[in-house]
Length: 389
Image (cartoon, one colour):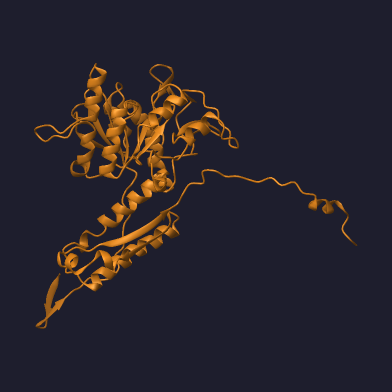
């Protein structure tokens, strides 16, 4: 504690009371892919590199491989912070999957997807919007992305393999991770090199749109029903009707696969995750839980190792509840509350320097199904009569 002497009296300054809590940054993208003719001095292989909204820096990835396509998809939506991990491009498909998944070498280097785990220590940001467009349709890659997301408290946008809607649903059944959103099919995008439309993974633009929504609206808004920039078509025929769920789009959504539609522009359609727990069925519920957990934890580093007291405990609880009130007023959550559970804080636990505080929260669910009941009546016929004099 800072102190000073005035006229022979020692003055000790104390800082107590509710501290403002800053919400963690959520709109940072983490992506892994190939770029064989990239500038190696800017994008060394298997190293997390930060792009701070700069197309100029992203252009140094060259024009080959998956990463240039991914950068175009992201920047079509917004210019966010992006952590890029470039992996070697190899001819053998199985070996390429291994390069993307990565490992920790004997020298301690994190490669491939694993390199996203050291982004915070190397480039000082934590990516939370994760993908590997061009590779995530491989089940082992999507599974590993889900594991990385668990550690980063991030969320994965993964492409299902090309084919039929039934194949996409069968692919989705291989996952139970609440942090994965499968997407089928892909986007058609104009390629200025090929001078024509090319098929691209939908997840590339999902990464960019998610970052845009975090910036413009908030992490409580799902990816669904927002216009997507830079696309000219869908790679498979998807029939859709707003009032009839018996369509291919309805079938995919009912089986937790986000799809693509064209209505007043091109849009993602679906908000579901692969979670087996209905409490985390929606993308917004998962991301709300992650944001609250990291926001609360990171805001209370100041409290660690302070002498435990009732004042300290009250300050922590009141600060968290003040943040919850703010988030509720802004529409990010329905409500939340932090409180002390005496049963979790016995004298032995307190003596060991351990304090447990509970908080519960209710995320804002998306309005997934809106129904209207039509009732025919004759009660309004009297309005046809002349008004009484």
